[in-house]
Length: 142
Image 1 (spheres, rainbow, N blue to C red):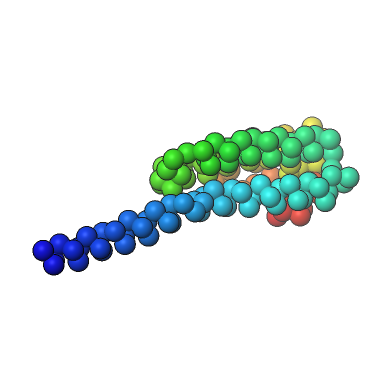
Image 2: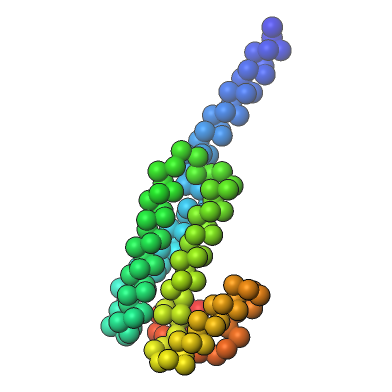
């Protein structure tokens, strides 16, 4: 029975290590949380230099990504690959949703080019095919 005790301790040690690692935030949660903190910080710093549309878009990103993080924190198994992937995909979806307002200065043609850039990026992966006049926020981020 000595061999059994040896394996029992090895399994208990592995279980303890796995449990401790699962109690930490997932890498995806940490990355999205860092993105949210940086977005809040930039909004606070640059609010006076931004258009009302860009401010509203940034506030919406903060609100929606914050809700994603809250939902993710409530999950029992946030480290599962599919859950991390969903968190990242949903965050990127929110960024794409507000990207034209956050990235491009106001003006019909500028906003149209920004929306086309998002569409082209989603379809082909090519970024910034059309040049747009950038907002103060996008100049700080990119």
